[in-house]
Image 1 (cartoon, rainbow, N blue to C red):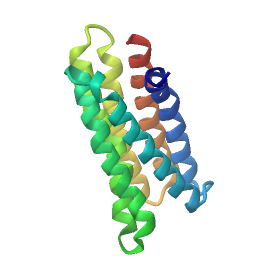
Image 2 (cartoon, helix red, strand yellow):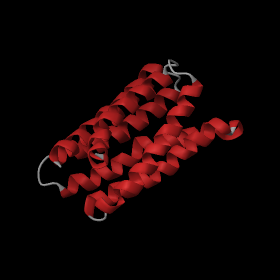
Image 3 (cartoon, rainbow, N blue to C red):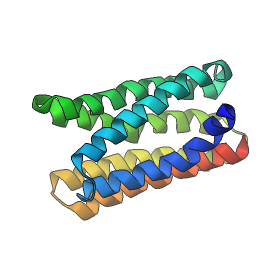
Image 4 (spheres, one colour):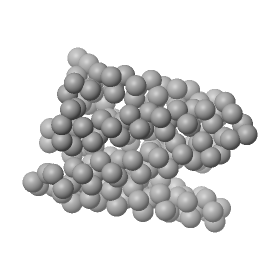
Length: 169
């Protein structure tokens, strides 16, 4: 059952997480709820890293396992940002931009390894990168619409990649 949860969890959790991020950006989520979400995500990532290690020792799965481990530390930065007010913004930016860009690395690796559907993974990587830029521009320009477009691009790109991977494998 745990293996099945590891296989089917990400295609559900990825779009859910990005929907949550959009809601948070728009102020529809309380700070305490964000903190709890970071704690839960950190726990899930740790469990996934430990329980998935034996199945993820080679090839693109090893790349993804390493990204999950790095992502755990990135998420812990975000969690710490809720506890350390003086460095909250940089720590939370590490978490947000980390999760925008880390999957792009995995998508590029996956895209160069799969015989068919390369465009899904390379498109997902591009959506991550372009979405991160759009989000940064939107925040700098204080334009919620541009920032949200960036978040949606990241979410769609990552969802497409993870859904294809779950279906394909």
